[in-house]
Length: 234
Length: 308
Image (cartoon, rainbow over all chains, first blue to last red; front, side, top):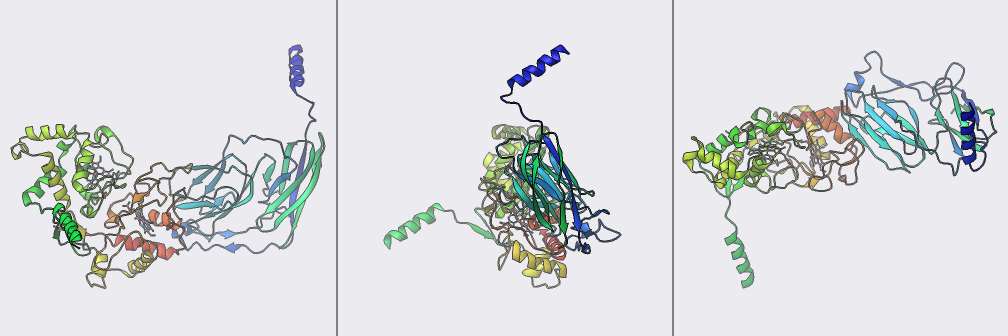
């Protein structure tokens, strides 16, 4: 016990000045409006893709709303307020799979410099093409059974639209930021950023069809702040 | 004027006169320095199929250029003596007699020069010419012929010059006046080919080699990290291969990375793989599913009939 205390002292002693314990923020993204009808996808370009849906053709719903009006596939991130702070990119890769002639997931968030792993689980050839503007644009063919690709985006860029050059209906989005304070909402529309340093931030919620919203937030030490976003129909 | 005539004379005297041998339907005449005798061709054929050419007597030219698979190798990359693998897929030797330069990167000039390559290559036959010639001299079958390396290479090359393959459904349709030779699907594919492929895989008014014999980077051999792993001629450029008999010679591309013609078509539809030196002709193609299938059907109509 004594030994532990000593250690804490040493650690504190090293730090140039005492850092205030961080706060956090949590919230929910909601949708209030009329959801348009899902679009039936015609996979005429590739009969092999069509075959993957023997019962009924695949439908696309870009506005995915839960029973409580919660909105999924929203990329929420800290847009400003973290300037000058450095956050190392995680060693683990973020994954996008091409499955059912569809990108899984629809929206991906990652840190600049983090690895992106792309796999092809389909019996057809895909050609993933992130249409990056700030980062380098690239595309790569992946035949069935080809191994995973591993790439990086070195600059922050929100958002990068991703298409497949072989199947025009395939779409996905990647948000690249320089820090770990981002999230993609699931069915419950929720997001949470833990351990956010004390300060004032601009948070943005982005949706591929509904556009984006910006909100300012003050984070105080040890407090869990709340911030909700609400999108209206198109 | 006098001076010009002199230059012309000099040029003529140092250039050997080439003999023209007519090619099968759809192929141009073949120009050769000397027409080989039947014995020389028979010797070349024997050597082509003889495993004695390799150091451990396990591998012949035909091991990697198998007549069953269109004189190409069905394996992704070839396997030489002692199970050693190279990094490239063996192309067909059918019609190789026409190429100005040999190999994916064009590093050999003639078929004679080319044939010396695999014999000496440690990943292939690993047999130095001196050792090979000593073995042939001591061999009861070859010994009495008093062969020289030059004659061995000429014989193999001369046999290869008989491996001409034309007279495909495409040739009968285009050059033979038989409008029923191609299916309507293949004809539709022919049109798509004319829009997107013929610029490199050339078709002429009288004959077609399906290659411009130029070197291009079409984005093959870009690894998972986006790096070109084989520079080929330089900058990832490889010689445009002929497409004759292509349905018989899977897998495809210099690295054997594409397994089927459908995969090849999808590769082109996708615009290949981006890299620093991608040919400007290679970009995503907007083709319907029907057009993609038609293109495959057209490629399948290029299977020829071997002369003789």
